[in-house]
Amino acid sequence: MSRQSRYLIFALLCAALAAGCGGAGKETAGQPPAGKAAAVASAGPDFTLKDLDGNVVRLADLRGSVVIVDFWATWCPPCRMSLPHLQAISNEYGGRGVKVVAIAMDDQGESVVRPFVAKNKLTFTVLLPDGQVDRAFGGVRSLPTTFVIGPDGKVFKKLVGFDPNSTPQTLVEAIKALKPELAS
Image (cartoon, rainbow, N blue to C red; front, side, top):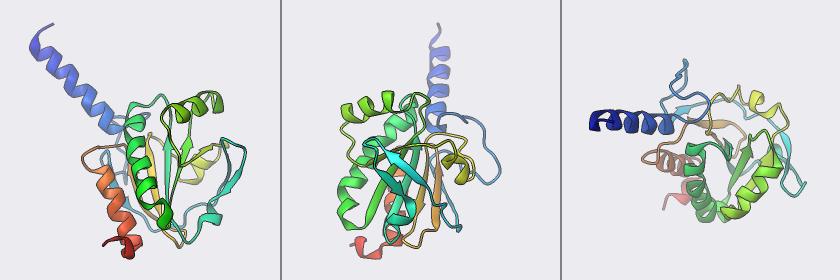
């Protein structure tokens, strides 16, 4: 294989990782490029889901906090790249009115999610979907897709895909915009 062919394959792989899983290369109207945020001003849908321990979690119960809702899967490379950043956000802001909630979209459910969460030492809330929650958020077409929900329960930002050069910073900026006391 020529050097030029290897470079082309590498470039295509990088582009696919940045675009996210499930909808790589498909931009639809209203969706920002991978890892970029779209401003949204709609109410976040209320959902009731179970975490890995069987505890019920309702989005409405988290009102008053900034909530990062991330749709992801264990098999998705950009999702796996994003999780350490979500863990860092949870570590930094978790005790200061910010909650990270990750909804694992794996078809195999808990049997693959639980060991993945343990192996990667994820301490934020991981939920299992009910077959409806992704539609309630307007149809999640790519993984990861991340929503920043303000203390008022409204969706503040939507990020599709993951870009290590911009997504973490965009999330932190959104948190600080919604909770100015965290900006200092």
